[in-house]
Length: 225
Image (cartoon, rainbow, N blue to C red; front, top):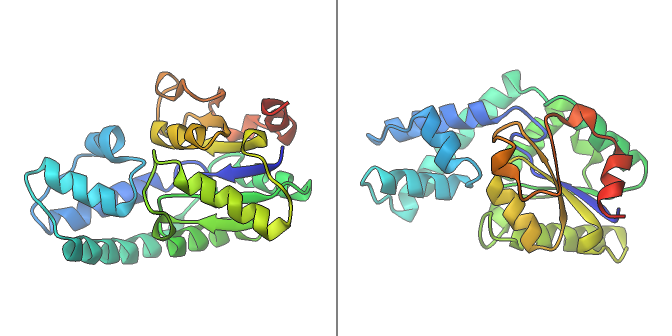
C-alpha cells in the first residue's frame, strides 16, 4: 500500500451529529428548517458551503456567497466549541491510523470539513500527529464527489514523503457514497465503513465493514495486492 487516506467526519470521529445540530441551528436563524433525516439522506458528504447552498435552495431560499460565508463562520464557532468539549473517536479509527503510520505508510486526510475543525478534533482524540497531511474544504476547487481532493492529497503525500505514490496502490477509508465516488474517480481503492449509510448504499466500495475495529493494516494491504 503506497498511501492511506481517511475521510474524517463519520470515519475518524463521531462528528456527524454535531454537524447536523449546528447546521440546523444556523439555518433556523435564517428561517430554514432542516430535519435530521434530510441531513443524513441529502446533505451528508457536502462541505459547509454546499450544504448551506442546497439546504437553502431546497427551502426556496437563495443564499448569497457573503451570507453563506457568514453562516459557515457561525457554524465553525459552534462546531469548535462542541469538539473541544465532547468529541469522541469512532471505534478502531485511531488505532488503525496509528498502526499504519507506525508501519511507515503515509497517512492523510481528505475531508469536506474545515481545517481548524479537523485539527482540533484530531488533536482531541490523539490522531493529529499521525497525519502527514490534511486536505480540507478550503483547499479544493470542488467538493466530493469531485475527485480533485483525493488527487491533491495523494500528490501532497508524494511531495512530502519524496516517494512516487500510485493511486491504484492507495486506499481511501470513506463512509459516504459521494466520497466513494470521489476516491474511485481518483483511481484509488476504497474501504467503506457503515457508520452513516447502509451497506447497500456503499456498494461501490471495494470492501465494506461495520467498524474499523475489525480492520488491520494487513487487510488494507490486501485491497491493493
